Structures are given as C-alpha cells and as structure tokens.
Figure 1 (cartoon, rainbow, N blue to C red):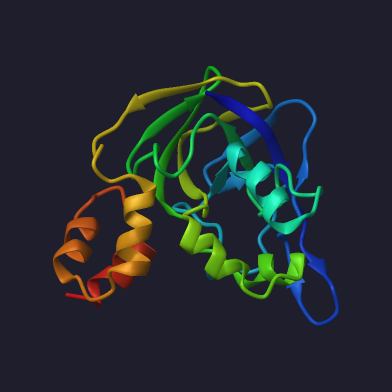
Figure 2 (cartoon, rainbow, N blue to C red; figure 1 turned 135 degrees about the vertical axis):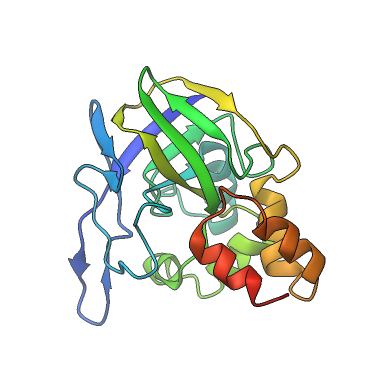
Length: 207
C-alpha cells in the first residue's frame, strides 16, 4: 500500500463557473497541515475543505476502469480532484475511522466518503458522472489530519487503527445513497464518533 501520486490545484475562474477540481501532480514531498495540502485550494469552502475534509483520497485502481468506460486516456491521478491517489486500497477496503500513517509522520483519519460534485461532471463533459460515481462506489474518501507531515509519491501507508471494520467507505456510501429510508442504518452510521459533522447532520434528519 502506497501513495501513487500527490496532487494540488488552484482556484480557476472559467467564466461561467469557478473551480479547483483541476489537480496536478506535485514532484517531491509536500507538507500536509490540518486544513489540507500546502498549495491546494478550495473554490467552495462551504462544501469542501475544513478540518473534516482536509485531504481527499481516491483509489489508483479505478483509473483503468474510467479510461475504458469513457474511452479517454487522460483519466489518471487527480482526474477526480483528489489530493492523494492510493495504490492497492479502495472503498471496499478502507473504513470510516481508519487511522493511516503516510511515510514516517503524516497521520490521517478517514472521516467520510466523498460526496461527488457536479464540477467533475462539467470538467469531463459527462452529465451523469456523479450518478456513475455513486452507482459504482468509486467516490473516494476524505481524511482529517491527526499529525501534520509531508507526503510524496511512493510513500508507504501503514494502518494504525481500524475501530469500525464493519463500516467500509462502500457501506457508508450505500447507507447514504441507497438506504435513504432506513432509519436504523442511518443511526448506526451516525453513531460513529469519527464521522464528519456534515454527514452526521444529514443522517440525523432520517431518524
């Protein structure tokens, strides 16, 4: 398990929309602080960024599938706006509350699945991309930063703690998007102390 690539992006004004979804690989180590990756920006600070959503990760293994499904060779690390592209892990493996160390110092905790955004659909010209991300489960996931430190392509990942092995990111996604009337499942997910405040707020409305 390793970091395949690290990406950052600046806010861009593209006329009819403003976005920071265009992320580009960073050469060498980049420092990750409690509010994100140095040099990275958020266009919509209401729904992106903050302590609970400081670092976005996605599975490197999804990109061959996206390239095949879209017939577009440009899909690679950062194509979905993530900061960390991770090899050998995906939504069916990682869990809400996982604590991961990257390299020697940086320590991250998974706070929620990524809520796909219309801006990725607009970037790639695929109107139903958000639906496809949710249906396939290839959403990515967010981290909060427990211990600040550098991250670089090739850094090893070490699992330090997994308090909720039953709550994979994939399962959390399913409860949020496919079990909207299941109050018991909503409460069970809501009870995870590591879950982000925004997901807790949404789930609480169901029970």
